[in-house]
Figure 1 (cartoon, rainbow, N blue to C red):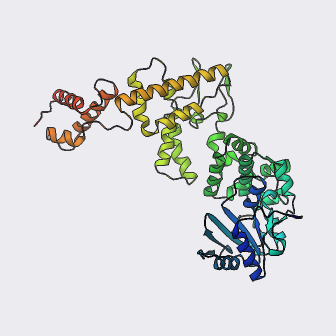
Figure 2: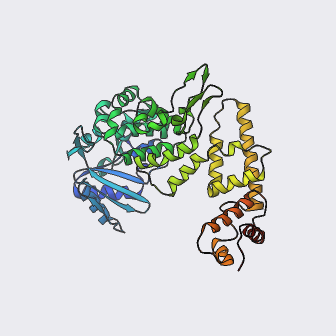
Length: 451
């Protein structure tokens, strides 16, 4: 429907007046559509990117609008997609000509031809993203809402404009987008639409891992990521995307002994390390090590960067149980080793462990949280005194070589490790003079002489 009520407040920014003027000069129709309009009606912070659809050439509209702006921003043109964009002030504006699409089942890239505004709204993923505001001079600010998207916004519903089976089969990425929007906006996916996602879940296989990962990141950035992952699980998408997680699902029982359902907890290494021992029950020995090794394959498959970010995740997985073992009577040595091994990531590791408290018992939860507070305090005390975080042995390998006239050799490593261990064990303070005295004593025992 076209709503006669004007929403000029939504498009009060001067750029829209310029867009209207360019539209008039080219004798086109143009509309702002999608996320900008949706977020206006949701009273969310307005998006800084604006999608403009022209009934005619979006590229020509972009050029004309740029010419009318004082700064004449550079227009980037993407002829293959029939789109153009430019940046002005803090806005990024993308232009496209209204189009209708038809899909081949083996690809999410549609055959495209020129169309009307109605055609363009029909091809949108959800009713709440098909809302359009006129930026034509004679109807400036009028809402065009053919699928009652405004009602869906009020009722917090994710719904497709057309048959959801066709919508999701045509472009399976929309299944992930539905779940992502439901997570971000705290909306409910309409049952008919949710069932269609389940029926079409295997179509996700034609989507590139890069696009899938992008949507997963957006779900993880939501206030409650578990809501989105619950929907991925419910619709059968999760085992197709992250089988490492669904492999954790279920509770086995042998001789009356059961384990927790690790799917709702953590640790991808627990599935491949799960064993039953008659004496002690279910075990997951070495699951942190195995899980950290799995990270590389997972990152590679999802096209995530195989760099320091991956190493950070590996370290978090590998060390995830370390702080739990520290109690009130733990030695300074244990705290020093924890800080040394975690290095600059010690605070992240503690945050991860606090988030990993899974007990439903309020008393135990409070107890575990207090224990972690004590661990944090011990870390601060030891760190202030011993300066262990990211420390290098006070005596360098170069100095050892010069002192004992050594070439690169095994002895240098032995001496450096001995100094490090002495500091971590508290035998000597983390100071140069103390380390040097220790070095001479250790070297003497190894038969090395100062030159």
